[in-house]
Image (tube, each protein chain N blue to C red):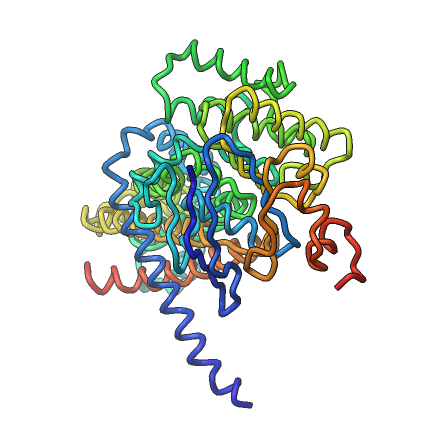
Length: 257
Length: 244
């Protein structure tokens, strides 16, 4: 019974310890960022793994997201109070400001976050990180910094790709399901477009990328308990990253809009 | 020379190491034995600075490693070769890259010299021609041998082995024991071997330290350990669970 009342305090204590270790790890990572040129080949390798190999899935998800927005807009516009060419505005603003960065982040949580946590976690439980340290390597500048740097570069690029293909998907669906021409769609798109909206999406992409990669690195780096521990770290990465993404989404909107 | 004074380490109120003190002169092969969970691996990781002890001091070559920063630790580690229990080879790299990684970091060798050193190291552990294999393609014994090749490639002054023969068949155990002995004699390194295989102790070590419940139960030669009148020591070396 007494243990039951202690549980919330233990959870708070555990959470605070976790936050402390995360901050400590990130501080070490930022200190090691000045040695990026020594691990340039690793940064490029991770840019390929995180960025280039994710392009197909980002294209696919953003294309269909754009199509869904278009079809749902068509459904809303059936009343006739809103002109059909407005669909371009709806698709453009939704994709640039919210869907492209958000969908990219959620997809990348599963594809990249889980992979990083499993990779680093396996290295931890199989003593590969200890081996790196025994060979005089700093595991933070060798394992963590290149991944975070690569994601900082590649996430905004992936968001740009998602922007393009999301709008393309919206255009394709609009042409097929509504009485709207290509020129009308572009008119709607340009009518409400503000460059800041696109920048806002890119900034969100950058923050989401940093959050996903840093959470995955942290979970992997402090993995304990063999294969079960790796599984727990991977699950925790996906759950915590999803929460962090929606939290950051609100914070960035409140601060920047 | 390695010197430990009053080393203690606890995890969640469980005392793993308690007031451990001993020194290892240059060129000696010391086997640290004990039951599973006796703190052997923790002690070895303390020696290389991977784990910080809660109390006490550790000197390697008269340098206090407890209070060293990362750069100072890296300097010390460049003179220590560590062989991990399951090899701890980097999954994403070939056998050759596993060995050359440390050489690129710790030496000023040219590309050709590194390639030569990799080939020599693999040859000396009987793994010639495996440079391009991935760790997943190797058996447990082969991984341990590559782990030894990686450790000796940097030509260290100290070689630390964490359970080098655990889980191997008797023939492979003998092969690894001979390798340890060979490097001990030919390179005149100081070796610390964590093991619970008494065969390895008798074949390889000059001295044996038995850890029990966090403390040192025995410290002497392999010959002495056979004859000492101590139930805990005798239980460990004979493997008779009814003795204590």
